[in-house]
Structure formats: C-alpha cells, structure tokens
Image 1: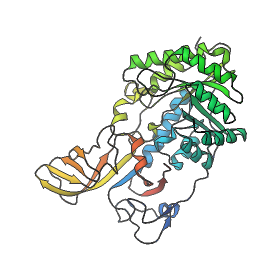
Image 2 (image 1 turned 180 degrees about the horizontal axis):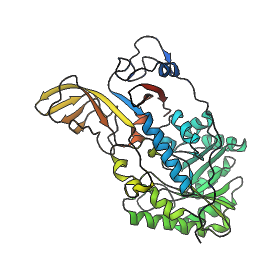
Image 3 (image 1 turned 90 degrees about the vertical axis):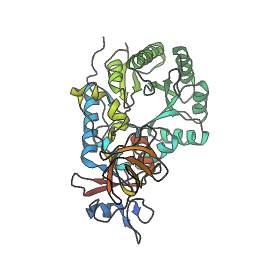
Image 4 (image 1 turned 90 degrees about the horizontal axis):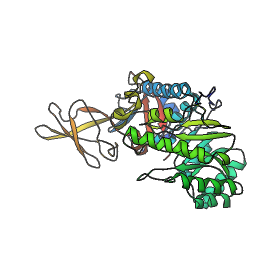
Length: 401
C-alpha cells in the first residue's frame, strides 16, 4: 500500500558563509570605471536599474518572482511528502541557495566535485552530487569531508565507480538508473543489482539508495515507464538497502510524474525517503520551462514566474524591419531557444549582436528580453543585480562557476 509519508525532512536553519565580493571595473553590466565597492554596500545604496549605475547589456533577477518560485516549490514538495534538494548548478549563486535552504530545502544538488567544494566552503550541510566522481584527488577530499561529518552523497553507475570511491576512503553512494539514449546511469535493472552489490560489499562505501534523471525524455508515457523501472530496481536491491532509502529523481519538466511514481511508502520493511531535485524552478524562464513546466498540466498545484530579464540597447537599424541589438551569445542563453521580446521577433544571435525583426525600434532604444533556459544564463554573469518591482536594486548576486 502506497501510504503517504507522514513527515518530510527539511533542512535545519542554516546561515551560509557568503563572501561580500567587491564590485569594480571587471563587473560586466555595472558601470564602475573607477574604484570598487562591496556588493552589499552597492545594494544598500538602492540604485535604480536606469539611473546610470549600469550599462548594457544587463542581466537582472526579479526579487518577487524568485521569492514566489522558491515558496511554490517548497510547498509543492512538502504537500507531496518529498524532500527538496534543488540543483545548485542552475545559479551557483549563494544568496539563492541560502533562500532555498531557508524555505526548507533538505539538501542542495550539484553536478561536479568543484561545485561540491563551493557548497562545502559556503556551509551547505548536505549535498547530492548528481554524477559519478572518479578523480582520485576529488574523491579523497570528499571522503575526508564525509569522515568529518559532512553529509555528501555521490552517484555511481559502474563497479569501477564503486571501486574508485572505496579506494579513496569510502562515501555514501546512490546507484543511478539511466535510459537508452540518455546520459549516465545503468541501462537495466540487472546492471543496477550488480553495481548495488558491489557498493554493499565495498569497504567504506555506504549504499544509500537509487537515483534517476528523467529530464531527457520527451513524452509522459516514456517518463512513466522509466520511473516504473526505477521502482522495480529499488525492489530488486531492497535486501541491500538501509532501513531508510533515498529514492531521487526530478528535473524541472516532469516533476509531476516523479511525484506520482515515487510518493508514499511502497517498499516493505523500509522507509522511502523521496527526494526531488528540480533546479530551474528557482527562476523559471520565458521559453523552454514556460512551455514544459508541470504546472501547465496541473495548474491547481501552483505556478512559476520568469525571474530573469535582459536589457540591451538597439545599436543599429540598418534596413527596414531589422534592428541590431547589443546583446549576444556571450550574454544570453540560446541553447534551448532564442530570447523573446514584445517589440519584435529574435531571429538570430552572434557573439555580441542580436537580430530583431519588427517595426518601430530606433537606434538607442532599450529593449527588455525574456530568456529561455536559466542554467545557461547565470554562468555568463559573475554579478547580477536583483531588482524589486519598482526597478530598485535590493541585492547583488554573485555566481561561482
């Protein structure tokens, strides 16, 4: 019987050790030709986005949208009996990680050992590494940190990965299930069993559960079949698992299917600790995730708001119906769709130029763009102003990529 989990584990109150970075002439988008200013002092001055403190292009985060998105996902996970471990690689911005932890996130997820190091230095108490770590230097450091009490979990999909973790001193591991044509992960339940047995037998290694990523699949039927295979794999290794089993999945496009497949208590003799990892939800977007968010299918569960905006200036109107804007691939994401604007259609981007088809734009006009795919927006900016709904800057994010 798939009873609801009676209680969800939230993170303890955490205050991260966030450095107060200096802003100076190296901070793209901030106009500081002379001197430097601490980011917190800059935010305390309450500059307007449009008072000459910035130049273009400029990426902006809307405070109200971010706060609403964090609250929505925290409530959604709690309502369905899941712990939330949002993927930090979306922003790698300490202030946003702090806000997600304060809202009850049980852990943060990262993609690499480097990102795990950043979160350790910031003071994040629990981290999931959603990849297999094989570098012996990184593994040795992770094992040493785990021995000191840091709660860190890595993934594995091979006996070689288990052996590497054991040789470094041991770590808690989550066996990963993958799917045909996908990225990492065991392709069959039999492979999961083999890797799980190796982890259960390896000195210093703790088999903590099973993880998967469904985000590369394109239909609900394929996602449901894959998640059913994850449940089957958990049952197949039940005799090797601890009393409390971490079962983890969840990108930002199919978390509703993850909830339906994994919620509740369905493994006899064990407590299923279901963990959702959706990361792009922190800022959402105006493209890929706006079209694919599960809240489109289940509007009664909540909604997310696009929190990223790009401002850039028209540099040239070289022919009728074409405006060239001073923003390009170095500034805005383009891998999951081009930026959008309500004054025309973006048809092409170069490194530092964007082609907009439309009428009415003039040289010098400032254009607001919505973006698609937050994960490849943040990594282009070291410092990002956070603005309230009156365009007043109330914080400055810094990113660690």
